[in-house]
Image 1 (cartoon, rainbow, N blue to C red):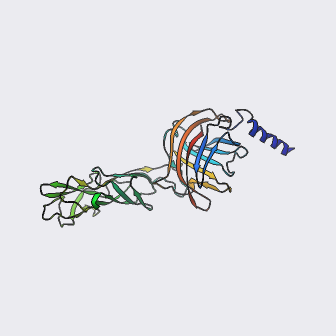
Image 2: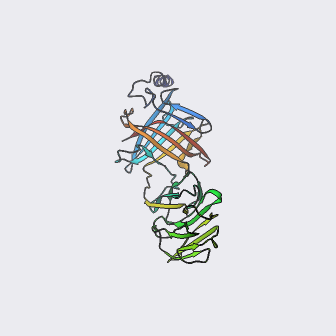
Image 3: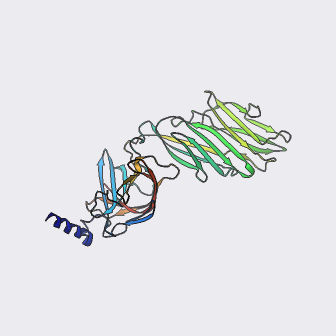
Length: 366
């Protein structure tokens, strides 16, 4: 008898979808779908092939945790092969949660930013457009390289340790320039910064060491030529192809810059590509405003984005549009979100794989 009742319930769900108030969101009105890429390109659509979009949320410590799962109609837990879940965290009082914008991925507890950590952003570029190809080496928790056309990155820094930056720009005819400096997240004045500007003057070249006035004050200059002043001039008889300068502040902290393969005569000003850094103290132990993705592969193995760190250069979760949708079967508010994403998923053993896609999903919320 029990088996008969279950069969009848399954038939009701899958064939007739019962009533609109009983069916999970998306079954009767198949507007929700996601196309994703793991090893193959797959599309999953709520309302087709027996798939539902289950939407729900829980509340804890003033934060709602919304779980929204594309899964077989008989699998509301979302742990069956082929299931795909999008999980959102945000403060209850933020009514505009997950409107159009780019959002961070939820971190595992072992990496989650805690009080005393920092949310940082670093940007770089060449305002003179003579060194268009740029490579940034960033030494923070790990050493990371960023190459053109990437010119910015977001960072989660668990403490106030300084980060090391090498930025190299490359131009025509082997022209290059490099700057080296440090940044301390909680103290922008902790370290100096410098760049070199080369300018044509008469029959020679003037080289100026520009200190970063948002950093610590420079006390001394030391050029590769032996000069110890901020600006030096080289005439046609002494112009060379390479110059470097190291500056030191009152605490003995240094920064440096160089320009190499400089042409002579100069046709216009040349200056190093430059870098800026900003950070705010991070105090978000509940990881509000973040997103996690769970995918169950065809073998039943569970992959999650919050089991490890994301790739700062490539990972993305973007809501491109958001609008209210009809309430789900529990009567909860639902937002219809158009999204695109790229992330790293991890299995239980910690093995990673890339996962990307786009689509229209739903998010239940208070």
